[in-house]
Length: 465
Image (cartoon, rainbow, N blue to C red; front, side, top):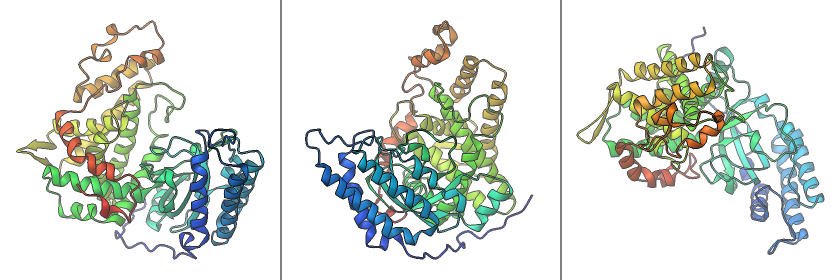
């Protein structure tokens, strides 16, 4: 196995040929997209006969400004020439067809960012799409982004964490759909006539993840009176180090969905399951990244320790108190991690201060990962419903179920003559409510978390407790 030694923060990014966002055509494109977005319906179409609808000529003029701006910016991005040509054609076809439900399959297939992962490489992306954890409607969005692919990460991907579709990315600028909590760019969100046979890329904005992590962690540490080791405190206050930690975490997490003893479709596509199953899957992937980070630290990779505490703090401080309480599977995973560490005496809440046993934290966190992996391994030989109950048992060992839960009462409380998917209806929206600790923390962190909406590396100063 190749040993990789790195010096954190020393990677040099490729100098830009010319920043797209500094070209005069970019604000023109952005403004035109922002003009189009409010006219669109949920499916991306524009009903020209609706009350208050724009004139067709007005929409055509806005689309023309978009296509002309793309053509002016394209020379800055010769690696995306095929995509931008297809994009202009898709935009014109949408206009010629009377602005019906958009179909951008041709331009989607032409966009191949994972084929050329070069650190600092810019991309200009325009698609009708929804933004995960952002805008649920398929409105047009325009995004300028940069690839994050330093040599050390490329070497790790090549030698031990193969993930040819993964793209670490950062924002340069974006339209309103990304002025939200969305930190991903996924091809399945784009409006197309039919889904392609396979997706060939997936992007995660590590700058937003890092900036959000830093803001929430800094506030939580202050609120909880937690004393951080000097190197971890330095990491929390270093945007570049956090970005590098997140891009490594995400790369390992992403590939883990299809690796291991999996009793079901790794992404659980078209499967109706209780939300704790999704929570355990996401936590398994995060804890696998944690486990690999422990190995990397032991080998001398400076990013390994950063990833461990990015996982711990984001999972314990932000996940449980973010979003609503309806089937919040990421929140469930964060609660489970904290409760597990607490019951194994790694974290203590004493005298209104949080204490962490930094020496035992890696070992006990890996222990939780092993318990989930054992659940999965045994699940291969179990019927679906039995597997769900075994998973419930694991979670409820550490988290108290809602007192009104039928699932907590066991199989005799459910109508087992129904198919498993119907029994999901008996799961409460908040099957595992927040503990008193998290209820209190949620009230103190809510303003900080709300302020991270749309955050980027350049906007962290606006977030305050």
